[in-house]
Amino acid sequence: MPPPVTAESLAAEGWRCKTLPGFAGLIGPLWVRKEAQAWAYGLLATADHLNPAGVVHGGLLTALLDHGLSAIAWQALDRRPCVTVQLDTHFLAPARAGQFLEVRGQLLRATSSLVFMRGELSVAGNVVATGAAVLKVLAAASDH
Image 1: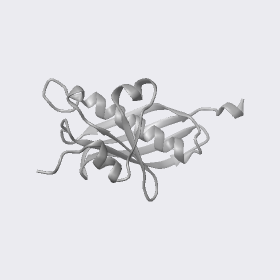
Image 2 (image 1 turned 90 degrees about the vertical axis):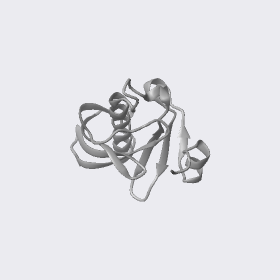
Image 3 (image 1 turned 90 degrees about the horizontal axis):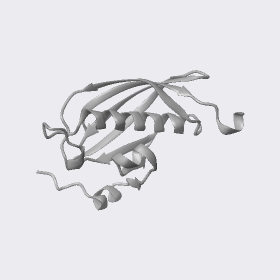
Image 4 (image 1 turned 180 degrees about the vertical axis):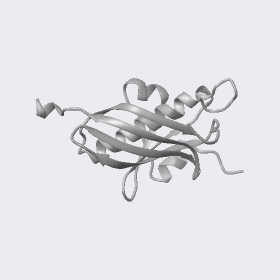
């Protein structure tokens, strides 16, 4: 059995804790790490994230995919804000309390107003959910 995931073990692996306002702060704290080509986002699942079946709620997995893919797009677009138009989520395996959920994504295509993303949510390298998103690029404050 692997050792438990802790804030200290995540920090030792290069993850930084981000306490965010709003909804993302309610499900978090979230973790972020710069990797070779992009950013990765994560969350340490707790008992508060479980559904009645005792596994991480699909709504949390979807919210984490949504946040991660949006944040990856935000970085790729030089921090231009974007909002989700569509998110398709496919659940492949359960996630459990105590596991660290990691989101990685890829920008597939960007137009002047839309971004197409895909991503994976994994636990210890095992994919538990995949997602495909279409995001609407919003006007930056300086564009007004």
